[in-house]
Every structure is written in C-alpha cells, then in structure tokens.
Image 1 (spheres, one colour):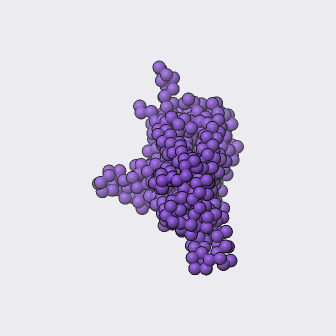
Image 2 (cartoon, helix red, strand yellow; image 1 turned 45 degrees about the vertical axis):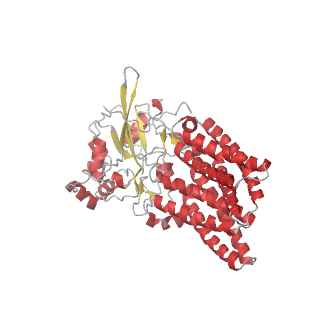
Image 3 (cartoon, chains in turn orange, yellow; image 1 turned 90 degrees about the vertical axis):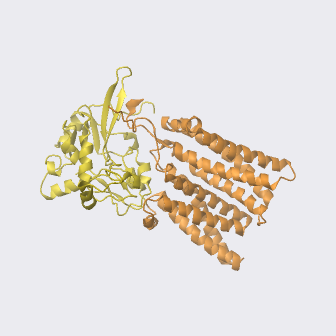
Length: 291
Length: 225
C-alpha cells in the first residue's frame, strides 16, 4: 500500500510561493520597494523618485496581485470589506496610494508649494508606509505558520523597503535626479546594518519559538532554500552592499557602476528575503505521532 | 444545533470509499479531494500502517472565515463552514490560514477532466450542470450541506436517516464515521465523544473543530512543542 505522508511531517506552504504564487512574492516585494522609495523621495523631495514609486506600486504590484488572483475580475469585492483582513486593508492602501500620489504628482509638477501639494504628500506618505508594512501583518497574523508569527516581520519588511528606496534614490541621483547622494549612501549604510541585525534576531526568535519555527529556520539555512538565503540575502543583500557602502565612506570617489551594482544587489537581497520568508513557512504536522 | 462528526480511528479499513463517495456526490474534479485519507507507517522494522480520515473540521472559530477578504467563506447557524464560489476571488488566504490544510484551490490543471484531451464523460457532463465547480476559487468539504438541507426539509434526521447524512458517512463500510448534532447530549456523536474520550485536532489553535477522533493517538498535543 502506498503510504501518504501529507501533513504527517512539517508541510511547507506552497500556495503563496510556488507556481502562480510567484506573482504574490513579486507583489509583496514591489509594495515594500515602492512604498520605501516614496518615503525616501519625500525626504529628498525627489519628484522622479515619487513618480517611479507610483509606477512600481500601480503597475508592478497591482499587476502582479491581479495576475495572482484566481478570479481577478472580482478584485473589487476585496476593497469593500476592510474589516475582514489585512489583505483587504492592504489593497485599499494600495488604491489610495495610487490615487493620492497621482494627485500629489500633478500638484508638485504644475502647482508646487501649494497647500494641496502638502496635503497630498502627507496622505500619500501615510499610504506609502501602510503599503510597506501591511504585507508583514498579512503574514504575522497567520497562526498556522509559526515562522511568520512574529512582530518583527512588519518591521523587517518596512526597513527592507526603505533600504531599497535609498538604493533606488542613489540610482536616481546618478541620473541627475534631485537627491543628495551622500545622504542616501549614509541611510543605506545604517539600514543595511540594522536590517542584518533584525534578520538575525528574527531567525533566532523563530528558531526558539517552537519546533515548527525551528524547522523553517533549518530549511532556510540548510535545506532547499539555503542557496537563496546565503547567496541572495547574506551575500547579495548584505555583504556586497555593505562593502560598497563602506568603501564609499572611506574612498573619496566611488565609480557609478559600483554604486549601481550595490543597488542591484540590495534589490536582489530584498527579493531573496521575501522569497525565503514565504518559501520556508511551514505547518505543524497534523499527526503528532509521526515524529 | 451544531453538526459534527466522529472518526473512529481503529475502525477505518483504508478502503477509500469515503473519498470515492465524496467525489461522486460532488462531481469533484480529478485533481481535488475534499476528504483525504492519510496513511503512515510506524514501528520501524515491523511497520504498522495507521490511517486517518481527515476533511474540513468545520471549526466554530474558523480561521478561514477571519481572513477571507471578500466574505466568501461563511458559517451557517448549524456550524457548517461553506464557501460561496461566486464571491471567492481566489486569493488563497484561507488555504494559508487553515492549520489543518483542508482547503484546495481549484486551478486549471486540477480540472483537466477524467480523460485529459478526450471529450467529457456523461458523469462529468452531469456534474457541470448539477454541481458546477469554478476554476480559480477555493473549495472544501461542506458536510454535504445540500443533503442535510434537503433531508431536514423532508423531516429527516441527519446522522440517522441516510438521505440526510453526508455521503462519506453513508458509504463507510466499517462504520468508522458517525454524524450528528454535537449540541444534543443524546445524539450518537455526543455519546461517542463523551464515552470514548473524543478529541479534536490541534486544540492549541482554539478553533474548536466539529470533527472529533476516538480510539487513536492522532491529535495528541505535539509533545515536542
């Protein structure tokens, strides 16, 4: 007789990362990156940064979300039920961000310095923060997956998004955008260090919370996800950008190509982080006797 | 009134009749199964195969209802949790949230037909009319709510009268499945739970499942936790 081991051992979640779930991974990351870039662009008052963040969220995040849904034409049903879940609230944040930022961009381009511009900058900024943080809440409210059940996850996603935002603002600065490249570099340096620390604390806490969380951490560090964790998060996401960021601190002039490489690595690291978090999420065995 | 089920783990004969009955009752596509039979070997050199018949637990505090962003997953007054296919947007949040992994997303590749590439069988054609499944939505066991409702309308008693009882319970030749009203202390299910120490799966999630298991090791608290 064939032995069916479904849910007898730790079972990895697949719906939100395998096959079409890849689009949700992209949407989650694009939300963090776009929101983070908008917040950084607000700080630098970079119109290009705001426009690019709007494009990332409206086109990449919105598009990926719609492609992921089994019935995309029914997406409007989600918007009218904010009381239900973070998924519903998140899509409302996305829609409001797209609307507020579009209006703010119009004000900033044609009517700069008006009260309207300030009001919509504030509103879009709040929505940008909400878009950056809500994916963390979506995951950390899932009781069934202990690896995600951490208050650190929303914090990590926000910081990762802002880090990506600082990175992209460096690229905008290199292309003549209105960004203080030194300030962007400094922001990147600090966030890289803080991010690395939070990732380490997050994994340590998950491993010590309960056996299923520990299993997820083991999967991430030694299992099938390990190459993405070590190469994507550790090497590309932390070590290389940190090395470039610190070299820019000590060296007077850093090659633009090197800075762009650092930013590309940061983005790859952010994508890898979301991928690993989604991929390593696992359920407790249904039958405890199988151990 | 709260409909519930008791699964006798020692009686299950691993015949898969419950799964076949459900497939017939609901015209399930080949890639989907609402109830599932889990089998595992224990015992090392002299392995013993244990079997567990699992399906949606119809939790009273259902996590899938909490997270559903459209309200497609709903709970009836009798405790049955069901999915309104016309409202489901296919976000799979309910699948993610269910600690028992008893929901399935009906993707296109799960609905290729009994004989892919060939024309539909008469059974499949009938299913398209009588029990249409929507690709791109989530599905799960509903305790054969349509049978219960039709039976009650005729004055029958679910769990006692076959025509008002879930198909898997009716078909189980080993009588491993028992159905009835958990709120009625005189019902057979309430008696089994009381007398044979029925237990629920993963009680630590506080979901209060409506399916109880008796005479087995399944569902014991994960001692490694």
